[in-house]
Image (tube, rainbow, N blue to C red):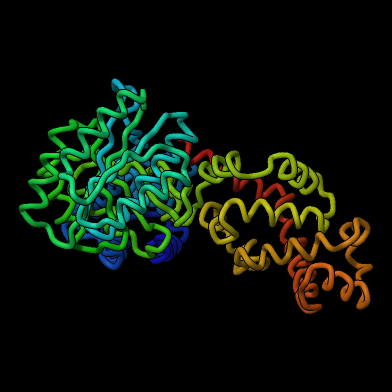
Length: 448
């Protein structure tokens, strides 16, 4: 996610080095690179120009605190300005209104509205304890009605019935009435998308909007929409008075410009961001955390939240305490770590959330996918407790027995043992004060 922008900003900030003074000239040179990075990320020219001008105005002549170098000062201004550009702070859904709270999803065809409706229902149900129901008014795509019904069963919420022979406004009004009867706290309304913005489409969604008077009207935007995103979002905002945006498919977007441009031009807060295909891959949007990711500083706050929800806390605490105490990392620790990584989406997903992860992760499991993790767990489970604690005893005959028990090839056992040794070496760095201090500093920066 945002790999290109992160890479460019890391290079730009690294190029500042330890300069003791910043003049109007060298600030301008650096910010010229920032502007080019934003344009390459598909940020609109006007937004990029305005942002760079704002940073330059704040940076030149700034009085720096004791111990802060001018280059650090410019980096701090850049960070603060990016956070401000993306909204400053998380803007949550208004769940204080009288129930049922209606959330209307709007957007163009292919943006991922139907899947997002189910993801949002899952998030509101599991994190906020809300009683949620869903309805689709997309009568032009019968598959959409069926898709939402299937997803609602996966999430475990009610999906109000609808048929393609009905009018969208009638479906929405009936669903709202039924949500009141069922004492639902939230009703999420999925609407039809179009490949083009046409008058008929806008009039239809305007009529649905007027009939159900939603508390939240959210524009669903594909992160890879590019320069056309701003025009589309502005058209919807003009017709519906949007209350926020949901960015989808951010995990597949290496640029990130559409998100920045739409936020700047519509002034609509980004409320959620989709980071994967799974039903739980929707996160509340925190500008300060996103900027930390963009600047290559990781996102420790989100990492901790994800760990609290998904990780086996008992095993994770045991491994962390052993490593922090300087004890040797064994194959049981390795197995527990892999299992927890699988729950959190794999090593690459964790890599985005850790500050400067390459130093530790590329040497160990950076390219291990979910299938390989599953294989590794099977191999370790086929070992005896003694072998897991003392892997040096695993000889050729033991490898054959382990491979047969796990249903894999002998070479797969060798791969697991090699990756374990790499992880064992990397784990030693976690017990060092320098890395622990780095994690604490990253966490403190995100809570300022």
